[in-house]
Image (cartoon, rainbow, N blue to C red):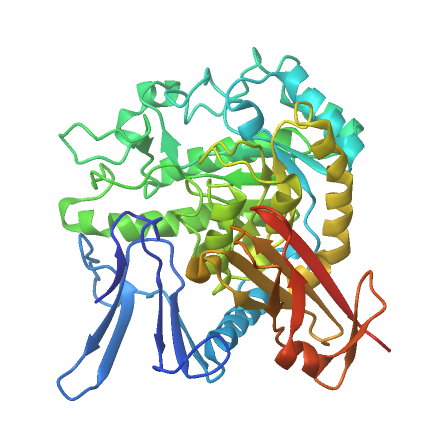
Length: 516
């Protein structure tokens, strides 16, 4: 039994992580061994119970379609596996992964720095935008306290849907009249930073690049390749292809004051073959591709050391520690519904720091599932991540728009705590099907932020008792907005009653501060 991916990335389907837990282990007690593969390509993790009750565990590059030819005197560097041991249950394992990745894996200057609150135009406009529409969103966003505008897919080539232009990374001036620099300068004048979307690893058949270089796509020589999302994957194992893709991104960044890049990858690898490799090295393509992506992103963060880079792959299909070495955050999922995100973010946070999880307040009815949730709840859920917006602030309800400055203030107030504190799972909606609760405790245990989300209300449940974790039992705490003083041990062992809000999809933040 085990987990695996042969999709050329760590994948949506399974993740390069396993945990072996004692039978009595739970969130806060029992032995847990965690294993996490620091790699962004094909992987396999296996667990085998032998006839003498011995357990063998293995994790590494998946052997399917993989071989590597070593000449005399050459060596091969294998990716690393992070091993974590906890005798305090899953919480102890989580804290070790979080500390390790925050302090020893992520290199960006943003790892210890507040990220700008961004608004991404994707769910606001999709491909239908121009300079005027983007500036109208930026103007209103600036008035509300948002700090960055990110222009998503559709700004290049002749791309008005997903059927063309990947690889043609030049500005579509029919959309961006006046050019990219003009747009960036105008956004900067409004007091906002500017970010941009790329998908550098891909090529559309309907593109000038493909017309000139059809052999640059990954495909089995002599056979027609398979399209996925109307695109092929560029053969980045070839230096000339890699250099072209890198320069396509870098030249755009050099042309204007661009401070953020969303690097996307919207299809997986298939039809594995390369015109740049001899027959006896075709099995090296998968691994060489991963190394090529690493090389490109290393060049990017070296040339642009102050750039905020966010990785993405159709959402979270390449959310792995290999990519975190190059970017301090990764888009968690294209599913932005607040209820869905509770499950997604809880599972992601088992291994990854909250500061790595791209999370936005999006429009309602939600564009993925059609669910309507309160604007306040969407903000509370997105707070357990990088926090941003993915909607058209010029079109939302006025009552929702008026809430944005309050959410902006909420982010600035709590972000240091969320970014660096210890995360605890209190109650899981995935398990109880009614409510979710989690908390973040500061390192000195002087404050704790509790998020409570009532997903489905029930009759005759007027309150719920929540026991907190990780506090100092000798300290006293005040709940913000109240005069009552609570002892730390009381909050951890007796708990506190949270009055159930009326209705479904309701949420509360509880902020406890040490009483000195």
